[in-house]
Image (tube, rainbow, N blue to C red):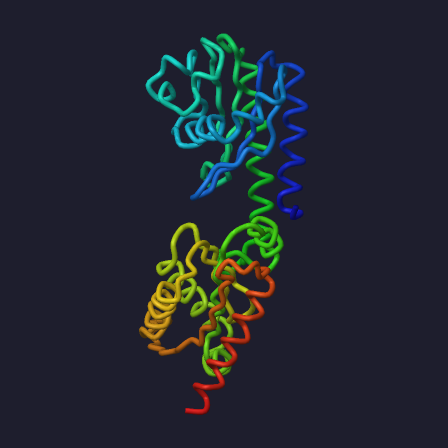
Amino acid sequence: MSSHDRSLEDAAEHIIDTLKHFLQVNMILIATSDTTSNRILRAFDRGDDNHTDMLTHSLLSPLCKLVVDQGFSHLAIPDLSDDSRTSQLPDIDQLPQSCSLVGVPVKTSSNEAVGAICLLGKGPIELNEQQLSIVKSMAAILGYVIELENASVTDSLTGLYNRRYLSHVYQSGADKQFSVMFIDIDDFKDVNDTYGHDFGDLLLLEISGRLKQNVRKSDILVRYGGDEFLIFFQHLVDNQDIEFVASKIRDSIKEPFEIRDQTIRISASIGISANYGLGSSLKELISDADQAMYGVKQNEKSL
């Protein structure tokens, strides 16, 4: 488990330890959310722990997503089986009759919902003003922790993931089928030497924006070094699909950039590797893509 995950799970554990002592609810859930999925960080069940495990993927995650997606400071549903937003969820019949929900979204300082604290009760959950305020305070603290953790694995210039984030990718991608694209901007040093490093930073920011436009939300985009980028594509291992994306990225980067009233044209060398179900580690895939990129660059120089 990466240190990124451990920090969040430790924070969730402390929050649950605090809430369970003064809230008389049957279950407390803490989840994080991103563009592709919701993940239960910690779950406390005052009754049967196995019941929690059984419901985690089939029901609890959609409930947390509902809290994340709604636009209020908190969500209260007195009976999940009798509410149009929840009555059709998978396995809702596994919950006790009249099971209720109170959920508070976890938000960052920019008001982005990145998770939820959910309370489940076998009857109506009645929180007084002070109790609800404490749950909201815990959600704010967790939002702050998530924001700090995200900042530690995010490149300050481009907003892409940085090299530190790779430890999380190595952990979470161990059982997934990935292909890797290694992108190096050709002769970027000449840009810095000619126009200055501030100009170079603006160019990198523009390049990052174009890369984002050519990948899916589920793809992972990393600024690997100064002018080097990695893209992890999950379940995109067909040669034609990868080459199609690579071609789009090459063409996008070849389009002229307008920066500080200067028009500049650049190109990129791209290397690709994929495990094709052969069990190659992500570190090996990165190394292979790096070598492939270097080969492309050498071939271009020899032309």
